[in-house]
Image (cartoon, rainbow, N blue to C red; front, side, top):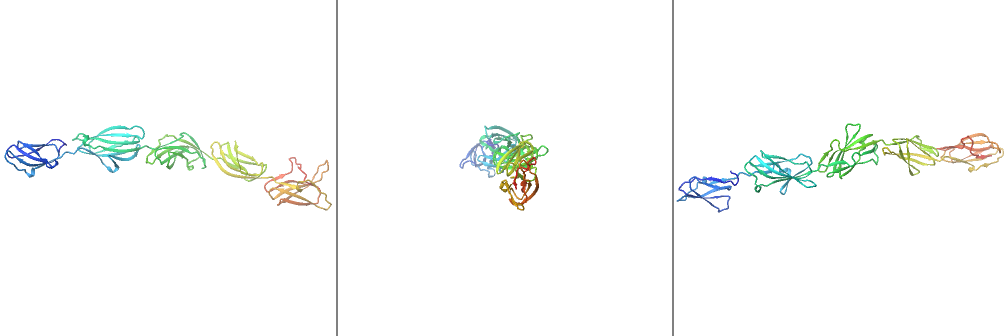
Length: 487
């Protein structure tokens, strides 16, 4: 065994008379190629510089041909192996032409490759790392190391995203210097994926939320960088709590996400919202460091509106009153007879005059401080005031004979049953006031009622009441407002 291409002396032992002629061959040479050696001493040598099995074919001395000892007719020359570099575990790399491809990793991951060094230790290795980022020009770094053992671990560079190529281009050991003509470089390639990022489009923004889940709650836009689909973990921390609630969102298939906080994790007050972790389709993830940008969410209680009275029926001219809770000013949406309207209230009370009959419904209430809106359905029915006519609404004078009777017809408008009060007064003479002789109270379940009377006087209705409303014909000073019937 000898270093490659080094000259080797093969020792001979000869008998006979000098000079000798020795014919020999290298079994690695082409057939028929025979070499010859002229020897002058009994202990001569044959100089060779090629590997192979050398065989003595024949020998002659000065006078006679001789014989070759068959047990000592051959000599094997072999080179000590040149150093080699190979992968220790080819299962984790995929051959791709003249290179091997290592599995993709993420920025900051710890990764390495093991290589076998074959030869005579110690070894000296030189390699080159070529980093090609996703954008911009590449960078080449030359590295080298010494190894005392036949196994070396090479740390992969994952500090920045992009494609890294590791080219092991020079290898020498204790026996051989590097020879580029007799060395096959080992090339390993690996892609380092960028860590995804998630950031609020409007960091520091303050958002308003309502305690009850209604359409129209504000969304928090988040910008995502990486390869979708993404998954997110968002922390929501209340100002009074020491630990945040974590909301997980999966399968975000775009680079923008409108985050809506689940109402189950919200309570009244101020919340701090921050992105805790983001992960993309490459499996790369990034945790947000403490103090990263966040947004604030103020949760308000929704405003409410309650009627001051439990009744649902009102009469024209009455006041419908409500009490409000929340932060003034308020905006109340309502409908009257199918027409939508809006009104504002600067305090916690809301009133409306029932000017005419119809259906009055409160649909929603919102306050300006929170922009929270509460839907409701408070319906009040406004009824027309009942009315009555005597004798078709005409003033009639009827003469009757003593012992006779006259019919007095009362007609009603409103919702039965009707209760009405009428009086019989003296027939006033010119320049004199009449006086009430009697007052009667009647009930009618129909829209008209006829009463027989045989007593003279002036008859008039002073009060009427139907199912919902009541009305009196007495003026504020107690005087009767009209004369309805006189005999």
